[in-house]
Length: 443
Image 1 (tube, one colour):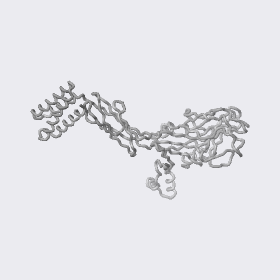
Image 2: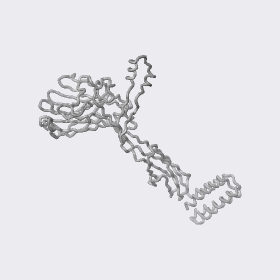
Image 3: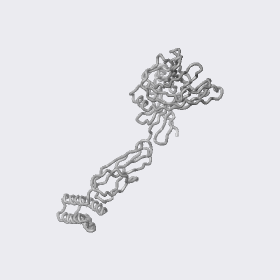
Image 4: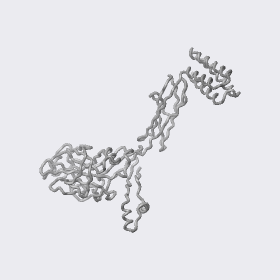
């Protein structure tokens, strides 16, 4: 699915004029001209919680101030060959020479993309510079090496597309990326290019995710990148070896000695997360005795409305895949309950854990006893109920489960009766009934 991305929107002329009062039509035009326009780029929804935006500038030289046509590319090659003041901006091809024979010939390319309107690095999963390579060999000769290497470098100082030369080249940082292309073949092109053979032609992706992040967060000024061929071989006379990439000025079926296509222009391809990570927390019940079924629920939410899957663990062991689970603990003590929810998309997983303490059955009865004695009830009623709990404790200790069930059943009946007659407050009675029911369910 294709959409269009307006990352920051377009500045409103009315607001510009309000904030910058003018006194003449000429001044008004000047104010409008200073309002920065913003990119509107096609976006592809990848269906996995990410989207990809492609910035592929077209022809039109940058005017040297880095404020040229919004969709015009800024790229060129600079060459050391006879004349040091040659500037090649505007050419459909960008040369990469590294000759080891006379006359010496060296050149490399410069590219710069305005990333202001592109996604924030906090959501970016990848950023790729994609260059279309055209490696050709003339005069029916084979390529001189089996592989050809290129390297990418950050540009550290400003440069003017229409004026930069070998003598005024910008400073470069350390090598960031190296790529190797297979170049030991030669497939002749059809007429009128039949004297030219292809060693390699196609897209080469270069991972600039880290560099993109540095540009966006301001830790490295964005003066673009330099691209060099590091493999050396002779390029002189009839030893016609051409290592080119397409520039932003290339178009369809342009006149010349090589094929051309507007689709080959350099592009910056940025993939970023559109999915919202779900949230989850565990709703733990009150403690339970060993052997009692305990139900845990996940409080999960997905802002995008995506269906969620669940994965529960108890002490690190898988325990269920539904929004709620019921579990029976066989051992008393501290346990860890965990749940992970996922919407199946990129950055679509969230997890939560909660401690859960399980009592022995004797500890559970003792907690019921202490709840009674601290309630300040009628001594006769309290003693009667505590006597039944004491008997149940002895039966459990001796392993007489049937007797314990009977004694706990009698306790339950007395609590229900005291509730009906008003001798027990409702809140306390319900608490005791819940506790005895849990224990009976464990036996």
